[in-house]
Amino acid sequence: MTELPSGWTRARLDEVAEVRLGRQRSPKNHTGDHMRPYLRAANVDWNGLKLDDVKSMNFTDEEAKVYRLQPGDIVLAEASGSPGEVGKPAIWNGEIEDCCIQNTLLRVRSYGPDPHYLLHFLRFEALRGAFVEHSRGVGIHHIGAARLSSWLIPLPPLVEQRAIVAALENRFSRLEVAIRSVRVAKRRLRNLRRRVLIEAVPIRGREGWSVRSVAEAGRVDLGRQRHPDWHQGPNMRSYLRVANVFEDRIDTSDLMEMDFPPSVFEKFRLREGDILLNEGQSPELLGRPAMYRGVPAEVAFTNSLLRFRAADGIDPEWALLVFRRHMHAGRFTQEVRITTNIAHLSVGRFKAVEFPIPPLAQQREIVSRTEELMAGLDRLSAAADRSERRAAALRVSILAEAFAGRLVAQDPNAEPASDSLALIRARRAAAPPSQKARSRRTQIELAAPPIRVIGKDYQQEELPL
Image: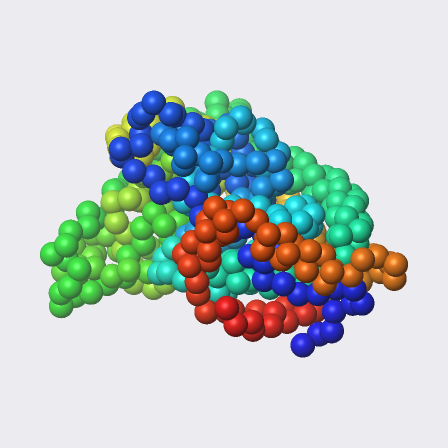
């Protein structure tokens, strides 16, 4: 195990902080005489707390004493369907009076260590994936109060904790300036991409062009409806659905199959050059188009997609460009109909949308010029994405240096962390009997086997309960 710097020690989290799971929601608490605001997982973000949608439920005065937040408390996402979100922490600064927590959050309340030091360490563990590695559950990853309580914390002297916090926040403030610049650049690139597509295809055409409807420019079909009876059969064939179609890209990593009798398959079989568009989607993604380019071979499509097959005299690449233009210009959203919160672009409405048609040679020239511009934007976008990934990796590296004792110099005159830990233990042992009983109940509730986590620069040590 990596040796800690002089003056440091290791402690279980529940030795230096109270760990508590929030209160479970219940229909009986949706109304009552003691309605109080509460935080849930949706209120915790990597950049802090999101307090624009704080809900309320009934907490009695006794319950509020247990679940109320105090300035300096840390709240963590106890569970998530997304592995990268498990244990995501934020600090509470008393933003809302008399606010409590719900059981999608864990609360960490320090007995002595600097709360911001604990916040940065818990964020480090979440970012490097340590929490999800030790989470449980199928589909939803839970860290649980027991596992978090037994988590080992590298604990420097208090003065060094504060120096580490100051050094981290200084570095992260500069890193955040760079990240904001990258995000501004990405937003400008998205706007520029949209502008290139819209200006490439003027909606009213130009001299020598004709403007027709989609129905006049080619054939439009809705895919085959899915049915449980067709999930098995003698003629199983692959098909594409809305989850496979992205802008100018078809994802073939998750194909499904359905029974297609030969005559039915022929009706819905895709040909190279067919354009697929999302028929049902969120409004801003409605009509998202991609061209089928022959991969995978022998594949059909379902009724979550529309198929456009270009008529003679129309290059399929031009048709794709027209539909990308319409999506980014919001043209398809003008034809939307909403059912059960899903926007739909019906065959009839899609057929009526205008379709500018220049001469074939000009179609190909515009497509070529636009592809060249978009390729340049793609390269810039890829560079911006790399910068974001490097910034995220740099953040984790800085945190790793901090908790290995290499970010700030050690003060040989500082009170050793082991002495501070002994004081915390003594203070807790001398607590009034009621507090001891409550603490003992918490330990019983949290009882669990110890954990072992291996990090980049240190290793968590197994400790018995």
